[in-house]
Length: 189
Image 1 (cartoon, rainbow, N blue to C red):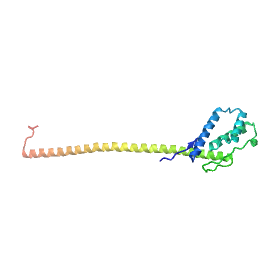
Image 2: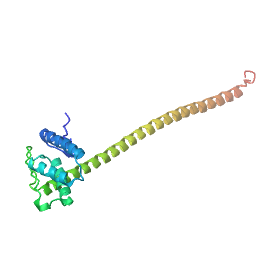
Image 3: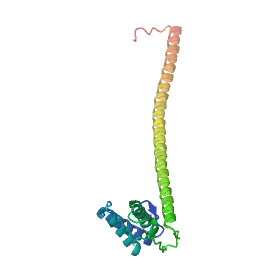
Image 4: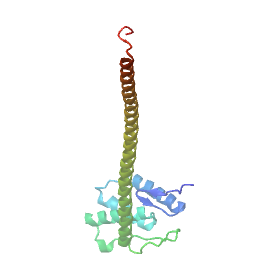
């Protein structure tokens, strides 16, 4: 039985429960991104504070989004970074410990994402190599088949040419014998 893959946005989760939670958060993030005016600094600050207060996000996807939102609010200059609420990190049910610091969580998320990208590239290269090998084996089979046919044809030609040589030798021997016996063969032809 094939092992199930619980993958969301480039991250593979170890349990179905974490996968479901991450999938819901990915949908929530997409919804928020569609409905938010990213130029309105006040709206960004309210969104960030509400997400922090409600502990809205609890997976690596949510933490990554919260960190992006935190950076945007900080860059906007509406509030100084030291007065911003920190991103709360909740423990996962799967037993995998997340770092307490949001920066470390983002760093860990980036590491997993880069590992995912490397694995994806390796799979792509592997598929290319397998395709090349399949093509090579197919080409070898075609060459072997055409070589076999060529061998068959040359074997038949060699066989008939040896028969022809043998017949010519026999004919010469018969004609020699007829001359010795004095039989005239010019009338029979």
